[in-house]
Image (cartoon, rainbow, N blue to C red):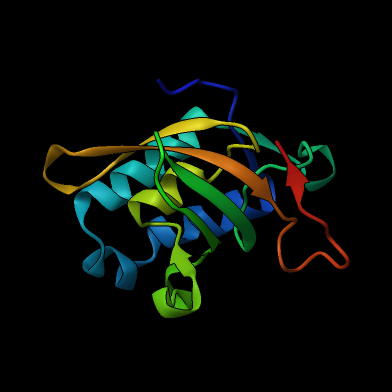
Length: 142
């Protein structure tokens, strides 16, 4: 069901994520699958300069609307650094299964999200807003 478009990670985000993986404090707090999943994402993705990042690609601090497939709910979240995560406010950690899955993908992508206990979920990215640090960004529709 999942399509496999090329994944892109902004070089600015790659630096932050690599530091997160290297941080000794974070290492003690992170589960092996979280670290491994993020490291795998960075290896698989094409790292590009901010100006070369295709429009509508999920990066840190991006607002994202996704829907669970085949007919699940739509959710709006922001993918953030773990220290900024707040599920009640819709701010999900890039280390969470859905955060890792969304990162680097664009509007229209259908992705398989690996969940605990060997389960999985398919989601389609409906809209991606530019990261919060960019001014006056609009959502990109699939």
